[in-house]
Image 1: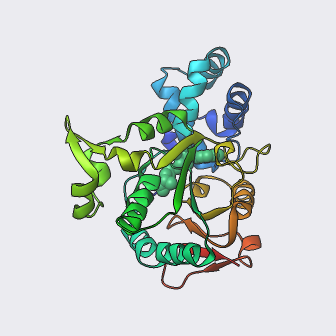
Image 2: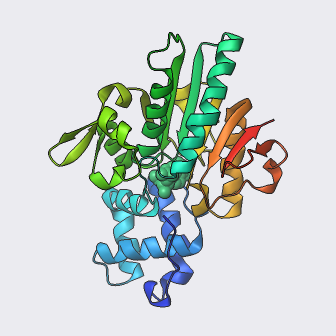
Length: 289
Ligand SMILES: C[S@@+](CC[C@H](N)C(=O)[O-])C[C@H]1O[C@@H](n2cnc3c(N)ncnc32)[C@H](O)[C@@H]1O
């Protein structure tokens, strides 16, 4: 979802100057550093949280934030915009199905490799890694394929991950899902859609901060070495210094000739353009040299 531009009256007058103070306090509480978010986004989200928390001014809010772990968690959730949907950009998933995954599967067979490793970095409520799992299963189903498929979904937001693990979704999340997959991969349950447990269990979720300087890859993935990484609609919320930090981590986690997918509004920063080739006609797919 594109952010709508900030309007002047959206910001508390005293917040424009002091939002960094809020983010500094939040870092002390949570260990997560959001000071590199785009200022207009950070200010709008903080402002929205101040109003929802019922605080009359910034100082009242800072006092509340200092004394309340719950408020810190709620603010962190407000700052991490977790909008997602299945097959969010249908052309990207079609390209994945027709071109990228068949190439990867063929390469694995030729080289006699045993595992296909995929990472959805900033997976929000799980729709992205599950969309990948649906396609992978479709492609390998019925084939005599001994390949082990590892799909990791990580996010900084614990609450989003809880939703992801349930595999339960509202109708509007499924708007872009091809009908054959709606029929074969979901069942209706109390007005929601329940993902087939076989697909749900193909994805392992874990909390992971892409700006964490102490770790190179999510612990759960052990050593990275991913054949394919989706990092869509995450870096666009950050200023360029943090974008570079995230890309440096992502770039190192991908094997040679592996693939990277970015969101529609995202570009590779300059230092990475030599090591990743954009795939022609594929929107935001890149292949590592
Ligand atoms: C707009 S959602 C994108 C979800 C999915 N990738 C998609 O394109 O549909 C952005 C996600 O990035 C996550 N995020 C933001 N900063 C992060 C960070 N530093 N580390 C890990 N995840 C982060 C947010 O929590 C949020 O769930």
